[in-house]
Image 1 (cartoon, one colour):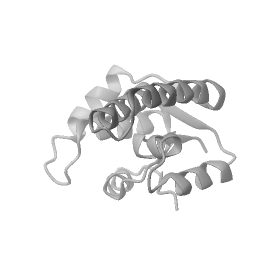
Image 2: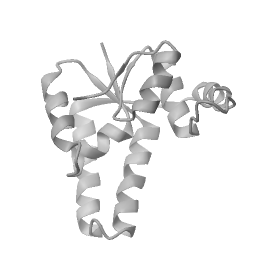
Image 3: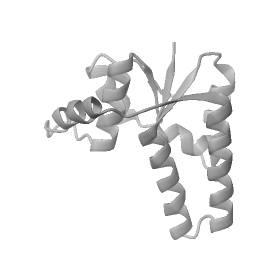
Image 4: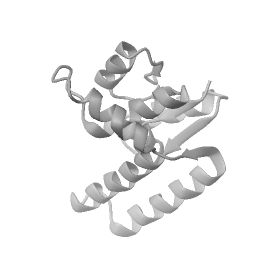
Length: 141
């Protein structure tokens, strides 16, 4: 099994927050490979930028975390590209008003579907939608 790490898991793996210990325990317990998409990496960086703007993190700390994240990705995960077909599939998924699905989350789901990956996320609503699409999803903890 290969695990696609959603941003909701990536952030607590690298920034101390309430789900950090759960994310770290789950990540260290699994022996299966991880993948991180271009989109998830971009969302990770955007999350740190938001924390800087909110004055939760200093700029220097955020930059150090991003550097650590890049090194972690190089050593630990397979980076995968988001493809145009993922965007097209995601655009179809978000046309349904219920359940509410944001475009970035739809792209994560489309990428998992295309590559046959298991989504790992802390977002229960996203996990429910993934299950409806026939995708495997793990909620750590």
